[in-house]
Image 1 (cartoon, rainbow, N blue to C red):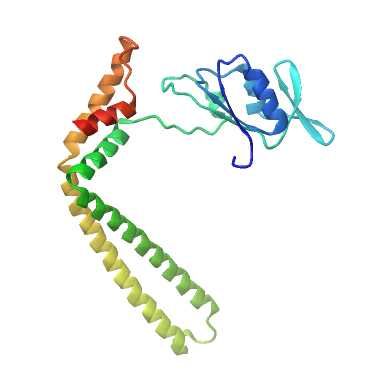
Image 2 (image 1 turned 90 degrees about the horizontal axis):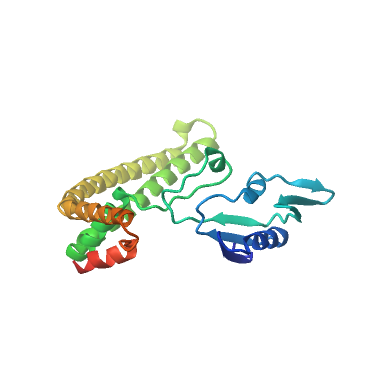
Length: 236
């Protein structure tokens, strides 16, 4: 997308079709916002109903046929989590869901609480996770190195002193890494127990947000964004 032109248009704009035609013709990236239904004119593009005319392709957009540029990209964005779309539509697109879930929000609020109340706890946990990933990578590299040495070894393996020494070193390193991983896992369990002390507060905050979100069904004035809720949570 960095090398293509990005154009943003609202789903209900009068110039939607014009923007779509130009994007298809010139290979732009078109981002359509506030989608609450799928305009029928989009389906030929989503299905890639391309017509081959010699060295070029064309596609039907409404009542027009437009030259199709292979660099064309289309993104449909909606802020409506309750939007209803047909199963046929989902078969034509790649879906990315950024909707807030209760479990996801609980995790974010827990991290927020810990950063304020127990910052050293989160730092230790982050460092442990980093070291654990490093050790897992080292273990993978050792396994690959071992397989490579065995694959390239010549003659009797047991009589190859250099290979035997290398294998013993690999075994020793793998034992150390395994012990380090177990120690890291045990420390993580201990840290998780400390984190659980603050879990009820995070769960309460998450429940409160979703209750507040239900208020918009009574009146649109009771509409609270996640950003504003986080600000209130920080101040609480």
